[in-house]
Image (cartoon, rainbow, N blue to C red; front, side, top):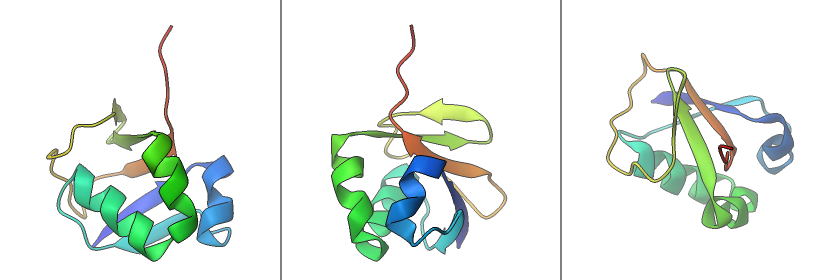
Length: 81
């Protein structure tokens, strides 16, 4: 199981939960399981989200491994400027 912190604006789709636990081994599985368990997140995930793992922000790094020791944060897609 991994713990995923949910960015404030996305919490409406998790029933207000700031942190959820899911079974996942990599970035793609995190997104797939979140979409399964919290269907309201699916449209946002399909539009694009970023996932921070231990403070490093990823987008589409599908096979980046994650585990219970990692700090994982789901947030809307972040664009640099």
